[in-house]
Image 1 (cartoon, rainbow, N blue to C red):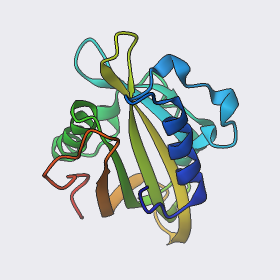
Image 2 (cartoon, rainbow, N blue to C red):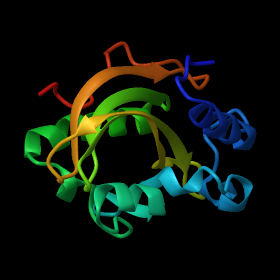
Image 3 (spheres, helix red, strand yellow):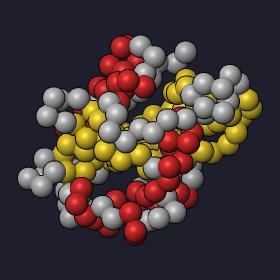
Image 4 (spheres, one colour):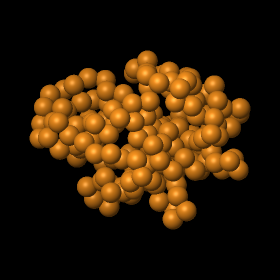
Amino acid sequence: MPDFRHSNTERLYDYWRSLADGNPPNYRLWDPIDIPQLMPFVTILELNEGDEFVHRFAGTGTCEFVGVELTGRMLKDFFSSPEEYAASEQDLRTILAAPCGRRSSYVVRSASGHECLAELLTLPLTSANGVPDRLVVQMTILETKGFGEATPVLSQNVEAEWIDLGFGVPSTHPVGLPVS
């Protein structure tokens, strides 16, 4: 098991594993009623027909943190540059292709200016035909570091690692976001 820094991250991972049958679980098996205390900081991304990531679900805690409703919005719209999005998108596509998971820690700033250290867990889900095309992402705030400008920012990738879900992991290190 990966070395998670928070019990909520471990609980989400355990729930995901309970749905898996040797393959990433079908998205239809994901039931928010099973993990209601975790859902406020869960986001589900889908690779849509246009080959772009869209927020299919975004928990209230995540939306409040970033200061905007994310559900139905394109992921690329929330990056400050095409280069930042390309780096993140590369990891997300790798998670779907492998399939594997990713645990990462970031310094983030909320819409209200709270600067925090957050742990993110990203795991694949499959469509009805068994093809990984969705990602479940959980953000857990580990600590508040201070206050800054009241603008949401995912500013610094502190650490990132692939998680072997039984299919191996890529030989490359997760790209994540460039350290700014």
